Image 1 (cartoon, rainbow, N blue to C red):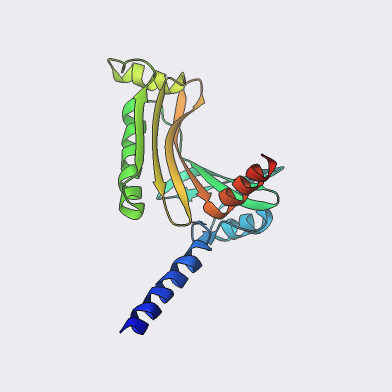
Image 2: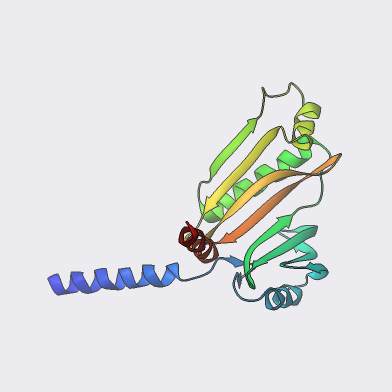
Length: 188
């Protein structure tokens, strides 16, 4: 019996260790390897390349049933590190919060309960017009952070330009974050 328990415990530890070696995925694609290879896989899923710059690529396409989303893939030291999705721009508090809370509900169903911050830098404005302008003036923070075994997802609302804002989802990979932290710690 003791041997069986030891074997089961060892097998469980091996599975956990193996799972920790996995990368976060975006659209089923592991967030690893060169930027160009990741972009090619996204193009294979129907995304259109808009622009490539040093360490980043922007693509357009459908995401979570929303058309015209902007997907930005970031790479550090030649490897994909995170992916951000900017949903189509909104012009009202009601429209942006409806989208935000709809996505919070879906992400909660998939990843579990998030850590959430929903606050205004001063007191909460008295009407929706002023609440929306609080986003545009960087006077409020709405963010939900979901942790997974392989990375995480952060959902926010952010200013796009002087009169529009967008809901943004950022996916990040734990292995990349751990390697970056190790480099930082080595420097200290």
